[in-house]
Length: 374
Image 1: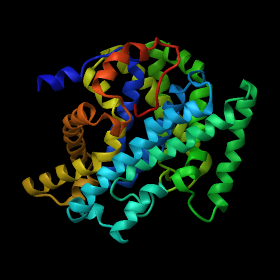
Image 2: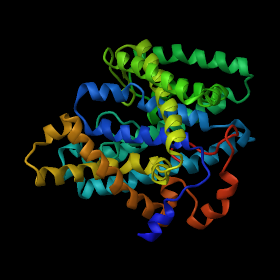
Image 3: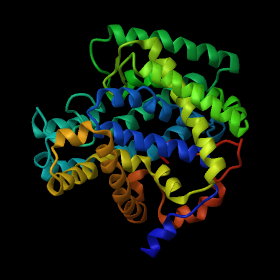
């Protein structure tokens, strides 16, 4: 236990980003736990766009001199973890979880999910063993598109190019007869949030430097807009569903603004809390395995208390009871993965992490390393 506590220790990071990632990943778990349409629509209105935005905010062209250099880094940080996490999860699913809970029952043959790893889409049963990892391969596709398209452009050209992706999103949504591999079609939508996060980085820094009072007002107003939109539209990026495309973008950016300002408020009020940092740094692992852990927690509650599975999923309070132990049970698993199998989540060995850690830390306002899951 002492070793685990030592692992979860404060490091020199920008804490409001970690708080935003922590909020985002907890909401991912909440969205997968609930069957309450209103609660799901509220979360899905902005949660995945938030991760794309943060990934873009953390990205810098200055780190890479060539595309091959960039590709090598992203293969190690995203593609390899995507494949390894899915292969491990597929084995767990095949030999245990597909008969453990109806959530993991596939309408196709057992090998459909295996081939789904290479198709890289989370709809249907293609990734039923590890559905949330669609985001990882989608982010890999998105970042490659962004790097190739935007790297040589001037600032003004980048803004124009980003706007040009909007009609591409609309055309794909309305006329593409099939789902593109590796989430490329979803990446066309996600690149809007990624690009805004990357191109308007200076504006974000200006926003978080505001006073606590101004941050609170902005957060409340953004939350009100988000709530208004979530009650009037349904969106699900994984399923490529947007009942109102314009409202989707309005709600998503309102939610992103709300989380960013709220995260900064929390940072100013609480400072660094190492357990939140630890969770925020390990979102790839959580995306891959939270459904397994959450299902076990649900089964335990069903066995101990006299309530139905439908009541657990529909009741927000009971759902929170499931989400909290799910997060805490994932922590020791994350520690074991980081210590003994770091390559699975795109990290160097423990000794190499210690050696390079000081070089990876950057001051507020300087380029950041890595993607949202790192």
